[in-house]
Image (cartoon, rainbow, N blue to C red; front, side, top):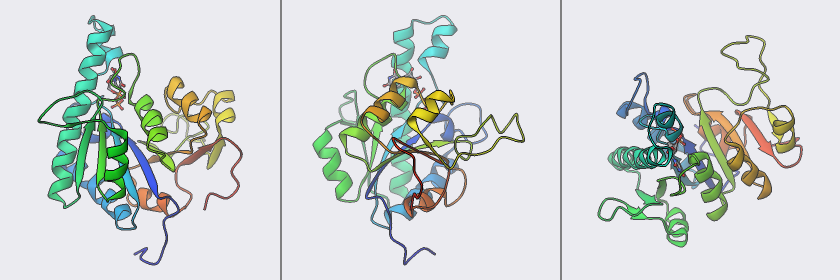
Length: 248
Ligand code: UDP
């Protein structure tokens, strides 16, 4: 389809929430959703783009919610962190079934099941065409996998961070509640803060801003959206340090 087109990014880091893997279920993993994601990723790999994935765990546990339900906060965060490894295992399995070379690098060692995170090896594996799935977040409690997205993105020198959500980007208001809500094509970090738009956890957002990362928020469930992004098309919302006139 886009055979003659050139990717505008060499290395992307994609953040998938655990919820993105649930499909229509209320909990857990729907393998058909991962199959769909693997096809979307295969399309960008075929352009020679290097793909890293940070996977969430909210389809199983989130420390904050477990704490509200009465569990110790750190234990809850540890449970959420382990959940990201479960998701990563399912993803690796389905990616490999679709002939996509993939490996999992976990911030927490789990010998014999996943590799321990190693920045230089991750970069090497990405450069040789493997999808690297970053699991166990940052390895620390009290943050979410948004922080893993910013941290790993900076570490592996990703050209862009892609945060997949269920809506087509950042809107003036919640589009599910306000039919007049409009999508922003691009925003600066400053504008996101001044308009108090919820994009990602504040700690992660500040880190992205401080290290001048380019971030795009988009809807992965929109078929072909990932490919359009790597081709430089206007998909979702781009967040950058300075105003962006032309994203292509
Ligand atoms: N978590 C953590 N440290 C990290 C990443 C995740 O403690 O570096 C825990 C935290 O409790 C978080 C949960 O794992 O809520 C699942 O991750 P997240 O909420 O980011 O999942 P998502 O919402 O993306 O599915």
